[in-house]
Image (cartoon, rainbow, N blue to C red; front, top):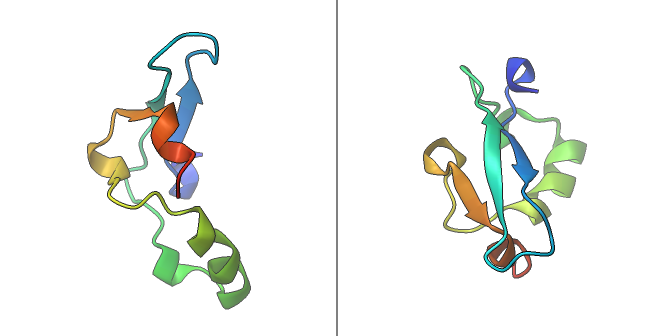
Length: 68
């Protein structure tokens, strides 16, 4: 995925408290939402985690992904 400009995250487990996603791949040239075709842009703009910069997020708390 990183070679296509996407960050990749994996989740530890759903059964432990403080579950988090952890980064497994970082693109050298990240894909920008602005560079996507309009039809794709319309769909993915609803999946943005406000306040999260993937470039600086080695972990993302699972709970923060439930309230977007």
